Amino acid sequence: MTGPGAAAGEAPGGEASGDADALPPRPWAAARALSRLSAGLAVVGTLGTVAIMTIINLDVGGRWLLGKPFPATAEIVSAGIVSIVFLQLAHAVGEGRSIRSDMVIGRLRRRSPRWADGVDAVHHLAGAAMLGVLVRYIWPKIVDSIAQDETVGLYGILQLPAWPFAVCVLAGAVLAGLQFLLLAAAYARAARLGRDA
Image 1 (tube, rainbow, N blue to C red):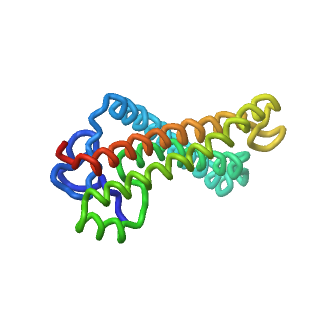
Image 2: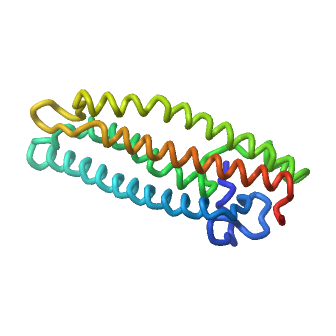
Image 3: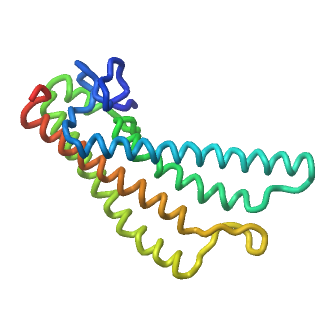
């Protein structure tokens, strides 16, 4: 399993020069802006990972040294992990580093690169559609979470509002869906015109 953008000799923006598995060129300003925005969300996700690791270490240290755990560790970590995955998803998709099995597409790419780009275009359209369905169902949850003042944590000890976690999932899903759409367009363009066009 590989990510198609993880090749040596990458040009700026994740495209590798001369590598058949590289992402197709995306010469659009929207692609560059989306790439920067996705990278920013990935940084926020990384900071979230550091925060979760800090909470876990405080919990373990508190149990061992003081006999008192950090309150609501399990609840905060479980909500935070989902948020972090979605915050980093758009960047992974945009850089071609999402996990996939490339056995079939790799063989097809060696025999007919343009057909492979066409298959990749369909694959990325399917990814955009799946994320569109996810966004459709996340939005009402955010509205309900705010209206009902839903919280994560332990009542009376440590509670955090639940909606920021859902907003992180929503933002990541929207940006990842847009990345899938731009990649689908780039692959379709490469299938139609070739990668040198």
